[in-house]
View (cartoon, rainbow, N blue to C red):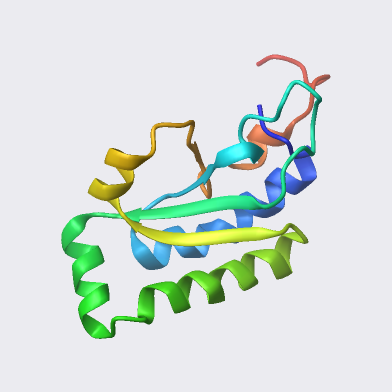
Length: 125
């Protein structure tokens, strides 16, 4: 369950595929957009997408330039927002630190195919 329509989820999934390929890591939808409140869909301020990198990959990226990771977060967030129309908050995180600090739901992005969007009246195989 997420706060998005199938179309919005499809666009977000498709937009995340080149990110997953470029970083060889899966982006995740996290935060309030993953678990909408009892009030129903659409109850979120922004859409939190996180890319958690293994420590050695994160450290290698950080060593290139200290401000590269936050800059990439802003740039990739803008890329995702432009393709989806959603208010994206994208961050690249150190996987160990993220796993220690955050324990909420994570919805993997960029892995779905068209079969995931068949609808509720598709005949069973």
